[in-house]
Length: 256
View 1 (cartoon, rainbow, N blue to C red):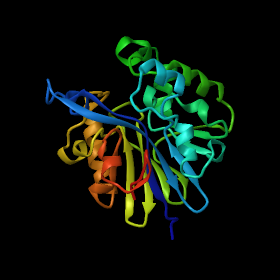
View 2 (view 1 turned 90 degrees about the horizontal axis):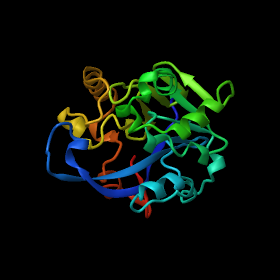
View 3 (view 1 turned 90 degrees about the vertical axis):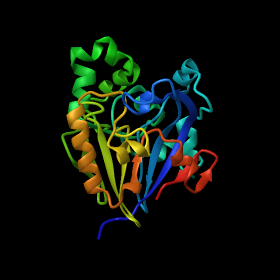
């Protein structure tokens, strides 16, 4: 019998208003939509695993992020210390998901090989469209971990522990991955930016940041097949992940 886990959404900034077309590709031009910034905690009897690291306070100040809370401080609000986190799954290597890697000094990072190789090794990643969402500081830090136990480069679907699997779900980026979690309510998925909002999955419509649209749509089909119910397919930036779920603290909700 697989282990059972709970999933918590830790909101480290927002909600902020952005053009609606950022979240829903090529739609609702001229309108604004709210977005929030999250990391996630998968909590079990013997495991506390983070999904993504958020943004470091120095970068948050540069960006003037509204309602920002240090992700390491958020962890303490759920009775953990940053050093208690020994596994972090990085869904993809965009700034708002990786900039906080230095906040968790004891953790090992699990990243898809195709994702890592593109952002750190491929010259195309230095071109302006990709540089606009990249984070060179976190890449340098991750590169410094090469050859150590703290950098786990994985290739495709991968079992982290019994009841938690990384699922390659490309399209948003080359090696975007989602996290399949066994919970009391069945199989839930942290999709991160595979969908910015719940309605991305419901309406089969991705966000504006597309690396490979056909692969993205295939990922939608695959994730909807794997999850027990589409309501347990959690997106990357939807304010509803905090507003519509039981509050644990001012910035933390329990999703399932």
